[in-house]
Every structure is written in C-alpha cells, then in structure tokens.
Image (cartoon, rainbow, N blue to C red):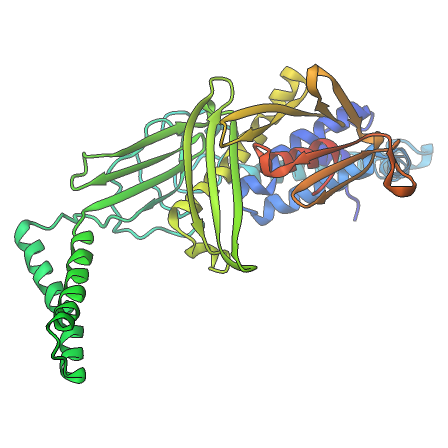
Length: 441
C-alpha cells in the first residue's frame, strides 16, 4: 500500500531539508506518546512521523520515494489516456482529502474534555483551574467516588490526575471517642504481659512491671498517633501541581502549596542506593523544583523507598513527584518549538542540591549540541561530527569524529561528558536529543 510521507509530515513534495526538519520536530512534539499516556493512536502516528522523516531526510531514499510518488500522483500521460488520468488524479486527491479529514476527526477526539487525561494545545493556554474534582489517579485509574477533595487549586490549568486520603463527611474524633479508643488499646497492650506472666510464672516485681508497662505504653502511643485527623489532597494539572494537607480542621493547612509550571525553569531528581556489607537496604531520593533565574526553590522533598517493592506501593508522595516530573517534561516538549525559534537552542544546567548552585552546561539545538566551557569558551558537536554517543556509569559521553585512542591509553581529539546525575530536566533532555539530534538513549 502506498504511503504518502509528504502528507504525513504535512509538507509539499518540493520541501527543503530545513522544512522537512521543522515539520518533523513540530509533528514529533504534537504526537509524542509521552503526552498522551501511550495511546495507540498517537503511538502509531509518532512512528509514522519518524518513518517519514527517515525516508525524506536522506537524499537517496527520498529520490527513490519521489519516483514512486510521481508515478502514484501522475497527472499526464499520452493523449489516448488523458481522460482516465484526469479521473485518477481527481480520485487520488479526493482520497487524500478523506484521509486528512479522518485524521482531523481522530485528533478532535482528544480536544478539551474535563473528564479525560488527554488534552489539546487549547488546554495548555488555560491557566485558571476549572472547579471540578479529579477523576483519575496517577496511574490513569478511576478514583473512588467517595473521596473528598477539601481544597481545589486555582492556577495549575486543567486537572489531569489527583489523590485524596480523605473520605467524604469524615470527622475528627471527639474527646470521648479518643478516650474509649485509648482504653481499648491499653487493654490490648496488657495481653502480652498477662500471657508472659502466667506462662513464665514471673515473680520478680521488676520483670512483672516491665512486661505489663512496656506493651501498654506502646499501645497508648500507637493509639495517640492514630488519633490525629490529618489528610492530604494532591493535584497535577496541565500547567502545574498542588499539595494541600490539613491537621484537625480542613481550614488548618500547614502545607498549602501550589506551583505553576510557568514559574519554574528546572526539575532536579537524584537517587542514591544505600547498601550495608554490599547488601541493598533502600534507595534515598531527592526531588527539587526551582527557578534558576531567581534562585527560588519551589519544592524540595526527600525520602527513601525500596526498589524491590512494586512501584505503586513505593509511597504516594514519591509517585506524586514522579508524576510531576512526567508532566513537567510534557510542558517543556510543548514549548520546544517556540523556545528554539526564540533562542535557537535549549539550555541544560547542572545542579548541586547541597550548595543550591547552578552551572549552565550544554546547549541543544537543531542538529547540534554545544558544551559551555570555563571562561565562556564553547565547543560544538554538529550532528555529522558525532562519532559516538553512549552511557557509562551515570555519565553520557560524546565523542567527536576527530577523537582517537592511541597506545598506552593516550587520547587525541574531542570527547565530552555529561554527568547525568546532576543534570536538570533529565527526561526532557532525552526527548530533546531524540527529536533534535536523532539519538535515542
């Protein structure tokens, strides 16, 4: 079956290489599966776009395709076939218009709908948050109907996903209910002491006191800890995220956080595995949202989890931060084309969380990556200059075609290293490298 690669990219058959590259970037950003929860329609569309770009950007493969293209859309042959040719041309164009209409209808399915996770460019422009509760979890699953969202964000755009650990109409316990609960826990705490007392036939007053007092005290502390009426709402929207947590009363909010993506420039995440005697114990994490222009930290959280645990059970807050990073990356993808038109490149920085210090490190543009050296010096790798790009020990290494290894480990030429553990907007960097340089890492 004939596939019209020009039609897929939305360009004319006489398009220049620059027009092909621009059309590829624009379509790759628009239909990238990461923006659409890997929906089959967008995944298929994205693959078609990559295939079209691969064929048309190469001179030899484009020449071969043009021969097939010309034959398919042939408009004139010898005079005896003029009538059938005109019909064929008309039919081909009608067929082309029908395909275009079908594609537009498919895309229209994903325009604004307050109860879907997908969204369109029209939603991106909306900063105000519509006043409706989220219906989807971080995993794209329906939320229970009996959850209460006690405060809604105001300026994160359309809400995509959310979380609440509060059941509708739940109220804190009164003093009488707390007293009954404490008494119940106290008597439960006496059970181990009674068991040990009769089984071991204790006579020493000290041990009797220990076995009765310690479990009972522990039970009372556990009861008191569970008496707190504290709950959390989490939201992630097209243009930001929010966290609201209250203690005792719904209006008492020790955590009242709302961040619009327009106020951010960078997202930093770092994982460190902790081992004891070479045996894995847990993984520490750090997540930071910040603005490198103002130096303001908008969110800074740390914690730990076990990588052996199923990802859905690694903690609500950890998965909240992961989902923020995902939608922040989508936000940056949406801005990629306009940022390139404005500056000609995208800046990526290294960040030290301990020092809260930035270092502008690389620029990525259409077909090139530039390393910013000390004293303002720069070195640029153009697409055709890259000999090799590979990952090694938490680093991304790029070798110029002039790079050579000689005897006794001597090296000549240019090689640069990106310490990925310190790179901000890391997920976006991977996507930018794929779209602008054609490298999948």
